[in-house]
Image (cartoon, rainbow, N blue to C red; front, side, top):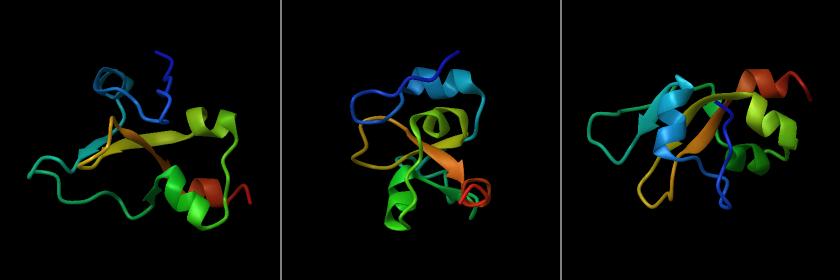
Length: 85
């Protein structure tokens, strides 16, 4: 299944469940944390790292949902992305 983000760059619940990748949903009391290595695109932007369109789709390692999100945000491996720069 090809992952296609919505206009806000988020992914639907159906897409993330079918992806088989880890899902961290902080709108539920049961999730307590994510691996230290995982970052969102917004966190990379703070560090001055812009992902290409290809990287945004091919290097997803998981998903996160936080209160107020309109879907699930992709998570990427900091170490993996950092190795490109």
